[in-house]
Amino acid sequence: MQAAGAAPGTIRTGGRTARVRAAVLDAALRELAEHGYATLCVEHIAERSGVHKTTIYRRWQSKDAVLAEAIADLVETLFPIPVTDSIDADLRAFARALVDLLTSADPLVVGTIRALFSDAAADPRIAELKRDLYARRYEEARAMIHAAITQGQLPADTDVRELVGLVTAPVYYRLLVTEEPLNRAVADRAAATALTAVRAGACRRPTE
Image (cartoon, rainbow, N blue to C red):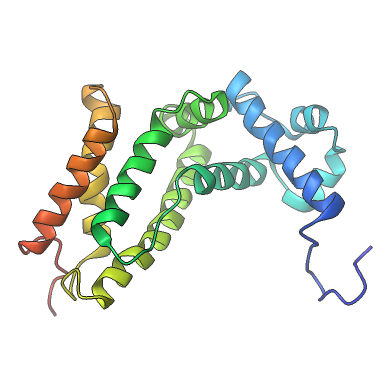
């Protein structure tokens, strides 16, 4: 039943609704971590969470929708995108948070990373989920770059996507290609190198 005074179509963020959401998303990540994407299903999520499968289908419609929301919540919690008055500090914090996420020993994070970077090659649904996740993170990173542009810390024609790519590329290169150690020193170098490059004229949007 909808709460009195609530706008049509809204969902209460507290109480039972919040508990159900938390239980379902946690169960989805634990199933993913322990058994992988191939065997993930709403029935297993329902059994693990204690939430009836009809409730899950009514809110999320599919296991992929559950998983997308669960991963998005996990990433946004562990990989925040800062916006302060210093782009140097923000980019360094951004790169460090990415490294911390990718090197986390938390089983839920490990299972998520494995799905995004291993299972994606074999399952187009995971590949799509990863693309959507990164698209959202890119949009959130725009605020960080645009704040720096407004404050005069970066050139006005800085290409956000190119700059974000310049910061993250060395991190993913070590993770996926060379398998060299990933640590905060790598993150700091990536952020510093990207800022040096953009201030020297790199990462500019093409003129018409």
